[in-house]
Image (cartoon, rainbow, N blue to C red; front, side, top):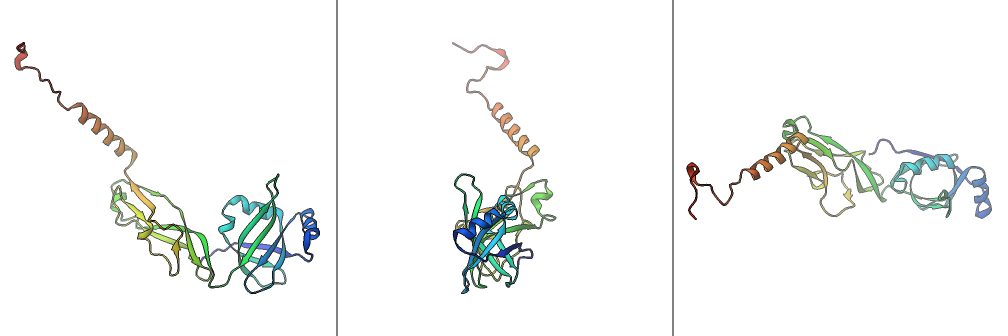
Length: 221
């Protein structure tokens, strides 16, 4: 289970309709609604500054939140829509979906690396590149992994670790159907440059098609 689901604090909005929404914006709030989960929709207000900061961090619509509203039970939600001002591009309304334990959602999960201390490629001076520090998975709301682990203990220089090499949590699957690279071990830049130089030298050493005669003798006309 993910260890750090961020809290999202909000206030219950007493009024509904356009008038209440306009008043919320004048008070420095962004109106929103929480729906789903076999419960009545809950109108809420979120402080503009807090919401704007979260939006700037990115992936707001693929982040699971623990919604805290005074007088209500905490509930896990995920954003389904952010409406913005057509000119200023600032948030004017936000919709959240309540999640059941069995709900399937798309989330970006952190990637951890293991086996670096014994990897033969790294022992030879190879460089590890984590191509995807996060992987988007379809997961169950009740069983969200904190991270997935990619093992590089057997990788040589030039080898890749793909999503098919990763043991995913039960009930999880990648949103991308094809097998894709998560981590790779490449040759150090110095070794790569030396390889390029060797290729150039080898090209220079290829004999020409016309050979000079031995002992400086002139070739017959």
